[in-house]
Image (tube, rainbow, N blue to C red; front, side):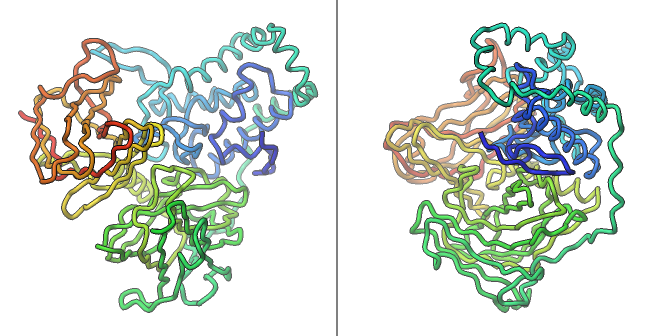
Length: 563
């Protein structure tokens, strides 16, 4: 219902665009009602054209941004898109506006491998386009969302190939006809827009303006001045649901880095509190850069590594969120490509702010709260930089790989004790958290099933062929309620295999667990007779009665494949 508009490349469109879930938010209504010549239709057409120009300016060979499955990362969450991830259904939604450009885009998607047949038991099935492709890494999302993304793609093509087929069926309903009379935007159609769309579709995209040499490094703050950053803007701290003294900043003389910023925060007594360090960018033209960079280190009780959020916004209020993982006591350089942010910086020529956010109660991605609620973060040399194509690709892949589990040479599950990539879910009012001890290779599962909840679960992507014999081993201890620990392996065929370990959440001393392939049973999903083969996800869950709570520690988790 939001009526605010933004302008990009000279085209106006409604704000829920880059800012929230992409083209399907604009184009979904046109599946059932011919909106092309309405105010909403013009907004859809303008936004799609702006996406084509965004692809041109960022060197992407294809276009089409909408909520989808991000290869290796799961489905779009909180509406925040991924800059490098393009989905076929997005351009399909505007095939009635720009048929030539959409069909050309389809052919490029196909050439990139986004339409290779699905193979099962040696047989190929032509099911159409896979859900998405990462244009930087070339990775394809080998999934079909038939009731969602492919349905939008299919209906769009039906309306195009059998002109208005679905529109006519929909309009035949007398209730629909009466309802459409009451929509002012729908009754005021401008048929002249057909010529505008046809001209845009026929003409090649305009050439990008000849740009002067943009700086490849832009210093935001070297912390030489007590009050303002290197751009002349006053840095500041903002506290939400906490007193202002809960987070404070000081300039500090560091023996290694010289002048640095010291941010002391204590949100431990305010369970819904957030603290935000803000570097205003004053509509900075950073179009020559493609990554944020800075040095940092953390101090806290027991020096547990700190994980926190980055956020960058542009002048159109498009927001991006990045997760900086496991900052320890030693200085560490963070180089975070824009493509690894959740969200799209639609206009890097006008950036508003860069923020470091200590959020105990985040609105976006609530399953990823601040890991350490009190401590000190040291910052130095905040800047925006440009990575060359090879370094960009490598860093994008490295950050994505941190979010997956891999097997080491001795069967160790690499990535278990990295916060990156873990996704958590819960039943009813249950809550859950993770505690990481990387040095001792311990994963801590914290849970409170609340008044109504019966389970909490954590999942992380994991690719392995488990068709052969294997063994899972780990040490476990816990405190609190005696509940059930569930270990889960998600197969690429849609079945879930695993084991329920009853009463294993309350062992007061370390106990060694060894599980063979025979212990792992089919739990749910898939088809009758499915067998465990290639897996795509590893999961841990705790289930029990409402009101139960505690913490479970898992140490040295290994999965050894036997020859």
